[in-house]
Length: 517
Image 1 (cartoon, rainbow, N blue to C red):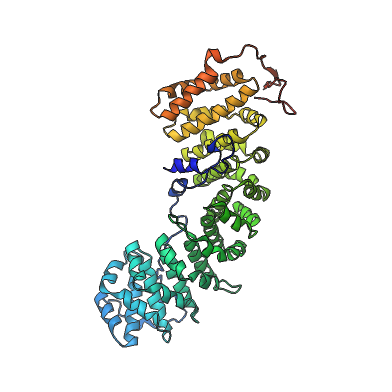
Image 2: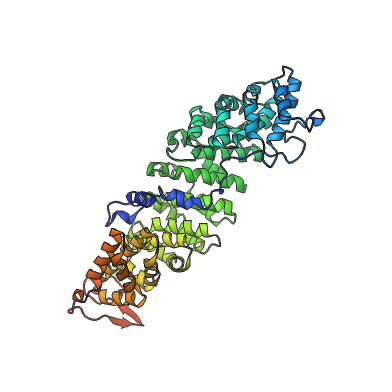
């Protein structure tokens, strides 16, 4: 299904083939599968010391370390607020232990409705804080555990705490809301429908503490996250100017979660991409592709990659900001996931017009891209194959000649025996486009010989018996059109060589400087 979506949703449908441009729809799962933990959906607030993280520094001596879950529940049901506080603190501690917290057991005992009720105790912020922390950690669990918090009416009460005069209470409420929003599209939309986003944005001020800022940006990114359905973009638009400013923050965590939010917001129609571009953040976003922090680089690259799935003008904003120079370097990055995403990004640029393709050539991207096509891991090779075939679809004849001169044929032919059928189709299309261009210049025979020399003809012939109908038809057409004896035109003059390179010598359509394969 992923590849069908990919084909159906190309950037530019008005060119030679529908497959010239593609969007990340079905590809999303595949591209992100390898790094599920790049951004945490939910986070538990784990207590590392006996003292609470609250600046109140309450005296914990009244809490028995051996207080059982049942005793905690009885304490929380007590009408005495001092007893309630001690029991809720003990509850929070049990839920904050690093390994196997008894979340389900505490839910079954009935702590959730009591904690939600305690959120309203404005005269007792210490109790509010502990209840909020306990709910944060319950909501950090499975979808059922998060649902237990939502179903008790926690969202509006947590929202009310965002304006608490006690910063620690407000920050813990942000964290809890972030966990609820991160559970999936349904809870995200519940939070958005309560109009929580403006309250979160109001916490982002020049003097906001770093801890609060990190939590708020992460929670906002969860409101932008998830598809099927995607969030209502109109509800998220007010966050855009804040995100544009936060890209300039010096903290890596803030930068990373800001980029994640932008990556989700740009993973959609061109109107959404344009709204992000209109904030003026592209130059800064491209700067972050130079970040030495992998946690920042990954979402920054994904956002840039999403933007270049847009129209030509949107792609140009990324090119004009200097992205091509760093993309060439990212193809040599030590982390395979970055190489793959860089190749994917380039494939959407080479799916553009011939001027954009020329800029890709001028930036020196093709040699490292062809190296990736030749020696990269398979996922990176697959993206590089798309990049080369997109190049062959939209490039001029002279640009295709340059591609062959750079050595594209051998790594393309090497993928003809791939087990991935879509990749084989992409490679066959690329070879067909190159041979078609050579045909226009009377160079079919020379290019056919080059393909034969790197084992390509054997590979194409073997595909004539392939189970996949598309593959065997494409292979058959290539053989009939370019490799059968009857296909050679004896009237075409033999190509002449200059400095060891083949020169196209037909009198028509020869650009300045000639062609060289």
